[in-house]
Amino acid sequence: MHIEFQLQNDEVIALRSDSLNFELARQRGRTNKDTGILETEWEGFSFHPSIENALNKILTLNLRSSQATTLEELKRDIELARHEINEEWKSSV
Image (cartoon, rainbow, N blue to C red; front, side, top):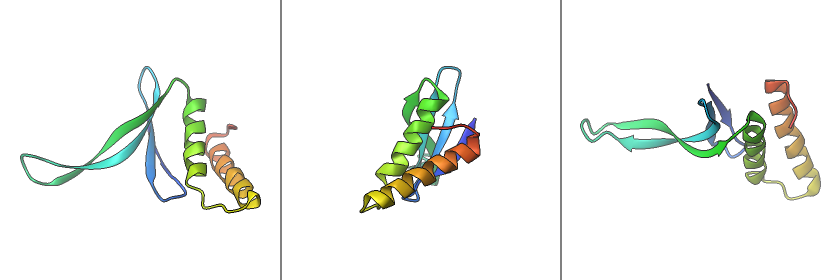
């Protein structure tokens, strides 16, 4: 599985999985030593035992990048982030 999400700060992260856990990853540029060409790869930064934990982490990352200056704006950002996940996954966080 490899599903990309765009956070409110325009950062793109990926939700990936293997046989043991769910992983959030960021893109990272690295220069190939042989060719000198800049290559992009995904690097894991957050690991979770369940999909629910991983989706909650995505929600938290979105809220931390919020530009809200009032409780009303923060509430709107929370509802928007939850709505995006709920619509995409037909699940609730």
